[in-house]
Length: 114
Length: 116
Image (cartoon, rainbow over all chains, first blue to last red; front, side, top):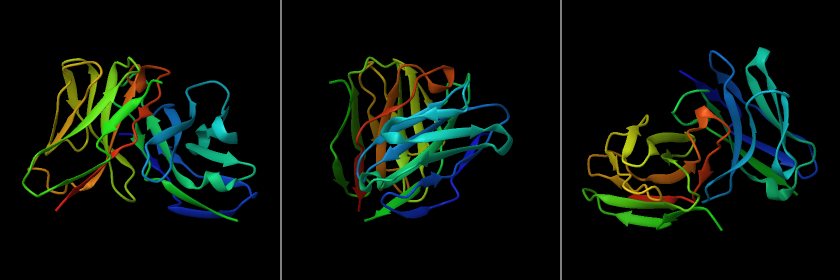
């Protein structure tokens, strides 16, 4: 069965600093990979997705993520964090060809200091 | 604007009562899903439906029921058999099941259910 691990429960960065959120997955082949963001009391918004091809994918709000097959990772990065980026971030994986939906990680809460 | 509407945003019920959470979408999506979110546990799949009049259990379906009589609607009933129903419930939809192609989930803004 597929699984997703987000090792960092909570990360704090200063505004303007760079950010990297970690995501590791367990799956036999190359899955579909996603990053979502959730503001308090809201639904989730898709930041970016990887299906195939270029392993560096660009998303909305200046985020990017890199798929590394050898490390089974799909880390999310942003070169300069804004205060509005404070939210909870979820990595998710889907099995190609499966009708089931996503398996989500447990999330990383991001705090941005002024 | 197209989107997913969940209502109500907050819901309070007494223990032992069934309660139905509404989810409506006007995105013309075939697939719809219900997730439960608890602090520190991410999202867990309750039920999903790929097409009208068909649905499948997810990972934590016990104590829940759904129906899919219309493409636009996928209501979730939390029954008295659900041992710990207090949670944040999220409804989502996609044009096709995500595993079959470029079809990411679109989420509603959730319903927070409190059972006392």
